Image (cartoon, rainbow, N blue to C red):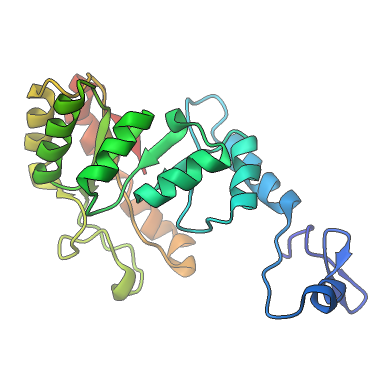
Length: 239
């Protein structure tokens, strides 16, 4: 179904009330054209789906780091999902609250970790015990505490293309599910971390896989397993 923000009128495509051919004549091609109404509508639909549940919808800056678009989403109260120090800078510049910013991604540098702690991001998602120890040391040096999450590799085949799969044990991402408890116990023993520790789960789904009830159902047991050992430490779940 075509978005009402991109209607056809006769044989002409419009973006809201502006003919696309006029935009092309004015600015040339190729070009990207966005609808603010579409962005805001979709964000509000996500939020509406979680009515009655404490939640935060975060936009991944890696999807589109255009400052105008980021400012629109930040103005609507969205959070930011970032994977680098550069994206942290852009998120702050666009008006996202650091308290609504989640820093994920592999290979964070010590400088990036320091910046994240200095700004006071909501969560730092970690990929390994080595990263846990580095973040702990940096936080101690800065005399700060930091709320963390572990990216758990659930060893799930989501039915997507093998070149973009991220949830299998053969993929390089995250902490194996069978050793996750040990990571949580180690984090709970370190003074740099408060009582809340989060779960981060990520599956790269193609459009066809995302529409498959079988693929979606296969992810459900994972947060349930996390809650078994997560309850003790006040774990947040992020999927």
